[in-house]
Length: 176
Picture 1: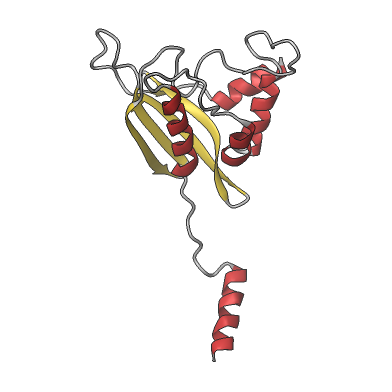
Picture 2: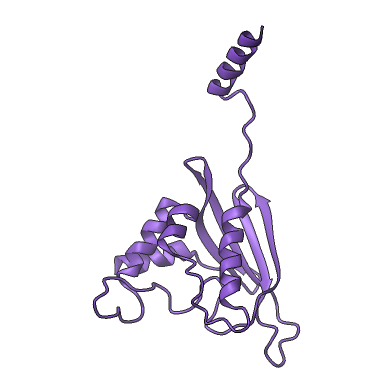
């Protein structure tokens, strides 16, 4: 009887009848937000964590996003250092949404369902007259590739409205 149950389980598993364990769509977003937050900690140089390192591009981002990032890196907004063939494709921190900011506070990662994860945090409240600064909000679109949830695009929310696609900006920059 045990062999029969094992055989039935194997058959059910192979046909997809067994419920799969759902992957955590927030995991790649959480890693990116936490790495960026470490770059903005008090006393940090801002270069401790490469949020878009090759390792992270391969593990946390979709193939399409990674390809757009790599193509845009060949056409960065600043000069490519001598001896290098690529540079950083952004002229400011796209996750923190600026060149200046404060240590991240009140980080929240929310799974909105349907492949959308929202990250909210406050990184503007250390400046004078910004005690009530609005949260920085990013909407991450998640796709499943090779059975894993991966970041396919990022949309900053500006004045309550979803901003432009970072992946689309990378594609345009890579095509220049």
